Length: 450
View 1 (tube, rainbow, N blue to C red):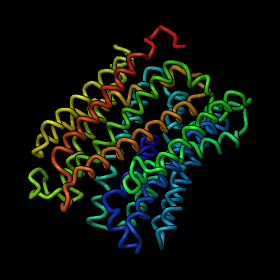
View 2 (cartoon, rainbow, N blue to C red; view 1 turned 90 degrees about the horizontal axis):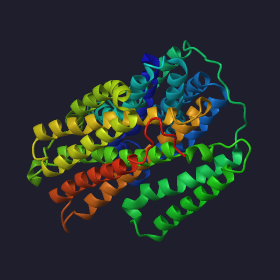
View 3 (cartoon, helix red, strand yellow; view 1 turned 180 degrees about the horizontal axis):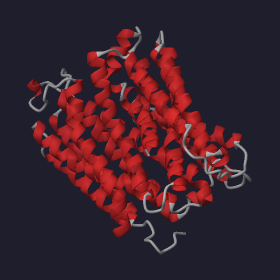
């Protein structure tokens, strides 16, 4: 469990650790802010593509083996990033780091194959919570390192964690479970285009605009290619992703719910630090630095880990579906309350504990539903797709919030209005409530989904 948790933390922290210092990177590497934004986006795009591919390879050649490959690739990308002489080498390094996206489906699969049945729900919950905690923890770690060390140490930290996890992974048991097959190259290409096009559009909406022809064109291209990908995968003998299994009601509805979890959660990770770092002269900001802003999220992240650890017990009593609904309801209430009251550091800390506590329950329930709804030999690809869906929701949430805040800035000023932050919190809460409505259609235990 310690090895899997360390591997998961290495990847999840790297998602957002660079965010607090994107402005500093543009000066350090003598490049534009737009180019620097791809340090974050390239990692997101690469991980979105590689996660289901590595999950499928884990089913084929062994999850322990692919976990080691993912950790080595992630560590190599981290070292290259730390040594990058310019922005373009750093972007390439972040693409290589994206191989770490496969860590989570591989961890889920290893838990399903090697842990006793009574320990699986709790272990799956903890690993899933680490993915969420990593977003907030990455902001805190990034702020600390940017404020007190250098930007290179963000990547050296990732390399050290990946190296330690690799040593541990070499000692993990190999179950020997394999699913014979081959890599669906055509499927990989179609999936690459289908995911990359809308993610690029989401990344550039702040500069292009949501209604720009390029934005709409990339969204339409991605949707069209993904439809072609789905049709193709239903006809190929060894599909990259078995669409028939993903179309099962428990899996489909859980993935749609996960999309909204990502939307609400990541929006909050963007909003709270912005409120905290806004100057007090604005009338609503706290005037904190990057480290202090990250510390505001720390109690909530700890709460998420605690609720996720106990979600397994709740699932055995109530069922994973009920835990998912409770978690999303609690987190929606927390976000709604943040919209109404975010005028003090104390209220923000208290309400983020509520919100992230609910998210911990919801995120812990999701992998339990997925792994019990698919054959054992398909846990890698099924949880890989679920991780991609969560990343898409996160990207969508962060960009919608960024657009809403930017649109509220009065002419001649630089700061968003307080009402825009209120609307952003409420929008995230509404997204979680929509996800809860979808979760109502997940088949109850004992009732097979179609």
